[in-house]
Length: 438
Image (cartoon, rainbow, N blue to C red; front, side, top):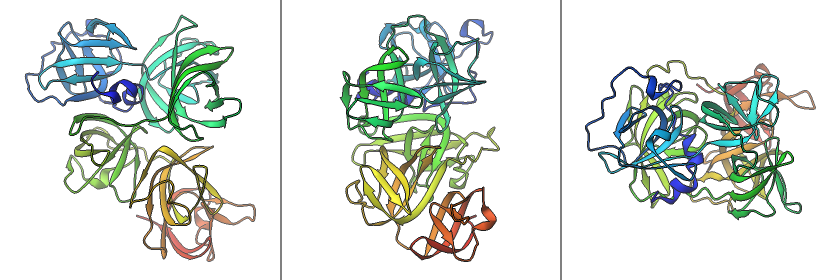
């Protein structure tokens, strides 16, 4: 691939470009329909998505059937042929506008399966839709798929790995980093990186890609990539299909499948919906252009999947405003910790070094162990706060959300609920007149 992003982050990319409407089962050889090659000269420069059909001279990805008889094919870093591509794999196709020039597939995950009852996971990432063929604890599995929520993927292709010494590929957010021992965790899996080539800074919460081998239940890493730098050529036209897993409050930034961050502006066009339909769980097809100067993907068109009429509003996104203190990549508001990562987007001229002491709005996603900041921006007004998250009882038996308690007990009606609230700020960690934000 002539693009360093394509080479270094295809494992990340491939989970980010879902087309749920495509069939993830069966094979091209069993199809009875005639595959008509699209006669167009305007394929996107890069198409990323799930394979729905392969023939001897073409490949169908997303809604495109692309001529591919002369394309260079690479599977998991090795030269291959078009016949090696399987239905359900998430691949990346480069085109010259009229036909495929390069096709690349890398597994999303290759690692040991952890079994907990009926739940399968690899490195802390739950495998939904995996075909459980009587796996044994720790058996090695290759997986392709897409994120459908934080730390969860929908499997569209899987294959058992028979070679116990095969190089594995893992991804996730670092926890339990120990720089003295040279170890960290990805979910339940211990990673030893003492002998690894490390790109970027390692901190708890950072998203990393890891390559290594299994040794007595843990991974001996050979490579750890924490940079995640996008490096498309300027104005590269890219097509992504996926599930929205994050939307910021002003609907100017979305994340597709927990990985691709896409900016939205006044020129972004919408099909079969409007900006108000940008909801977590909604399936979309995004045409985007890489802007080198702004270091971002900008959506030129977003098409909503009409069959996805009831998107699942998930409870793993958060929004909180307040005065921030920062130490070691942790932003703290009212005693709650929010992790700044290599995927955090800073607005209003902010940097990770200029956050301390400022009144900010932080938005992101969270699970049981970490709240990961996706966007940080200056909060212009402190009179009204937008708060999104779970309302709980604190140790003083008071209802609170992100450390804020209500002097008028207006939070009490929302105990044990995930809500989006608008509250009036009183002082320090006190609010009042909290109501649902419609």
